[in-house]
Picture 1: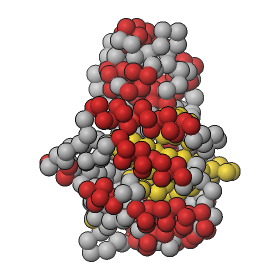
Picture 2 (picture 1 turned 90 degrees about the horizontal axis):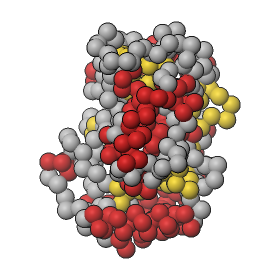
Picture 3 (picture 1 turned 180 degrees about the horizontal axis):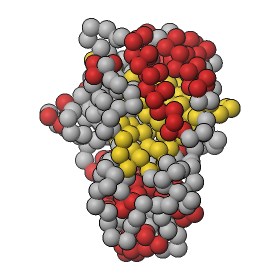
Amino acid sequence: QPPRQGHGPAEGATRKPGLVTPPANILRLPPVSLYVHFPWCVRKCPYCDFNSHAVGGGIPDSAYTSVLLDDLAADLPLLQGRTVHSVFFGGGTPSLFEPASVARVLEAVARTAGIETGAEITLEANPGTLEQGRFRAYRAAGVNRLSIGVQSFQDNLLHGLGRIHDGEEARAAMHAARKAGFSQVNLDLMHGLPGQDVHSALADLDMAVGLEPEHLSWYQLTIEPNTEFYRRPPNLPGEAVIGGIEESGIAMLDAAGYRRYEVSAYARPGCESRHNLNYWHFGDYLGIGAGAHGKITCADSGRVLRTRKTRKPADYLNAQFPPENLREAVDPGELPVEFLMNWFRTGEALDVDLFSARTGLQAGVLDQGIADARAAGLLEAASVRPTARGMRFLNDLLACF
């Protein structure tokens, strides 16, 4: 899903000294992806802070899809002649939606905007039986990559997370994806779960590796505001246990042929998520659906815009497009950290030419932050690349900028 990022002040707000709106001739338009948000789940998980809502009285499938198409049509001018680089259906639980609705969206995108040949088209799915039965239909609709929200293979841990599937259904979902013809599958897996120790976390990871997905998203459970876990915190493993899990787990994944190409993403060679890489490299993306966010570079003005859509599904179903007051320019003073909070997640050395091309700023604006980060041992001395400490403490690294 798109990274959580703050919005810059509205156009005309006070600018930081020495920074002005980037001239349009410095910026180069990056690839543009499409994120489609489906806001409903069977029930809300206690750790989830995404814009998701329990189904309740049912899903207005056809009506919501029609509004998605209106939303897309209103955002088409933001493409500025570009075709769509990748598509990601996120949520919520997109696999609760009818495959025919997914097909309607993809057909509209192809007809009105165009989709790059061979584009990655991902749909998030849960391991429940209902969703598994739809995998083949999603493949026929044009989805070519599944991201399955396993989280754990152990029933007691899944129960503690409020998940509605069990370990056997998690394993079966992977086999069902293969039978449906998916050659690109991601498994979402969490560690640092309530009551989990190093052995338990590595057992989950070993099971995931044994299923041979092309991609693994392996990340630590964190407690976010506005969640049930925030109101009633569970007993989570301590720092020593988390450190042991991460050290052993990274070594296990490396030995199994999964390269760490982002702080919580591991892939076999050539199977990195192109959609997510576009985020990390500060590419553009349209966001349609209730609560969806977007980021767009404007060729004519040199501005970088943040867009957002109304969050509540009922309000979104009655929304007018384009939405008023939900598009705003990012202050140029915030562009360096906006770029770096994405880039440094990859662990790559900074591409200064790309920094200038995507922000319109000269790389010299980063000099003081680079010096501070090196002094703190968060960046390598010979390159602008995070050290192992910098990767572990990304928030501290970003604070230097």
